[in-house]
Length: 258
Length: 264
Image (tube, chains in turn red, yellow):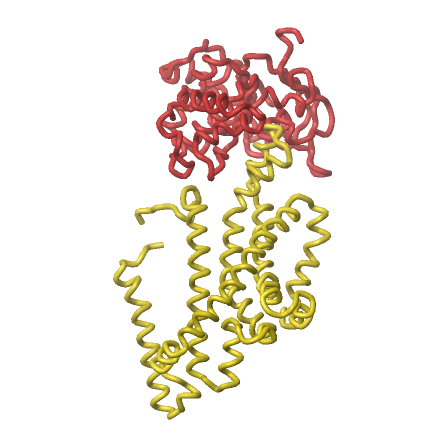
């Protein structure tokens, strides 16, 4: 595979559940290695479905989709998924939760303990490794979830509204931490969110989606260089970008009738 | 839910207990019923003291039968639920028949059980097992099927095997259900054993359990002793339930929400 070959490639993909209405229509997208692609759009536009297709959790109806050149299911070793809620196993400590993917792959205990401890340290949870999920705050749980996903050193990280349930301050912090983690161990990201600010801060490409059927409405490139500092959010160019995306969202949320 | 202050939490049940005993004496005095029809609590305790050795030995026999039946039900209930949880076709094929078996009153089966398992302890254990088996299977199966779909997706994403999904995800997440099943079974097991003794134990000779004492005291019209037997059975049931409550705490208190410490 050439270095610049897309890591995820959709070609005229269509998706429907059973014989229901079309969920996704004519999806064309090539995600290059190193991209941080965010999908944003009204509820029901199929943005989470896009991630499910890439992860191989859900089949499509027509068209094509490859991940790293092969079918999504065969590329699972290269990807990790971060869910809307932290989806930690409540009967395992933070440490054992972070070890889970390695354990499922049969990684020897010593190695997985070291690797999970290191990741928990990187997300600032070195001190609560023995805590159970219910003893952790929402933000801390999501950090464990991120650490768990990154223990596999995935090439591709799929994030389905991971910070949607958190307060704004925690969300901003985690946005910054996510970018720092990505700088340390690069991965390609496909991200779903409802927050325009978050989308602009994180991504280099934003795909605005429309519903009924779900489709890509417009693509907005975001050219601010990485690493991005928190101060970026206060700059006028940043605000202009936020406005541009918000405007596009208004277009798809309130369709103009002829 | 707000917790009551300890004084009320202990005081209120004590008070209602006292009221009940008062009412009991009142009814006895007002009705003029004789001791062998409605003994007073005092007469019951006196009978319990007088028969203490017989009652204790019988309670021991009953406890042994109940415990054996309960443990068998716990183990086989767990394994049966695993089987039902693993395969949809097994579940579809077997579950209706399990329900049919559960609907069959054990009393109807008792003569057959004696015939097959033999009188005495084997028959008693079988009756206890039959009675406590179903709530365990039903709860545990429900638990195995109630796994969080996102957790299942997580395991699939990690290419987990079916065995890993079962052992590392479905079984642990079904533990609260399994323990709820055990709790119900713990209340049923002593009842099952006593019932079994009453039905089949008396053919085993003189050394029966509490169920046999019910039979004996009844034919001897020793009504206060009969009430004392009920009291002993009640204590035995309490021990069973307390043991399972402790097990429930031991398994769940670290992580399950039902043991959340709260300030309110």
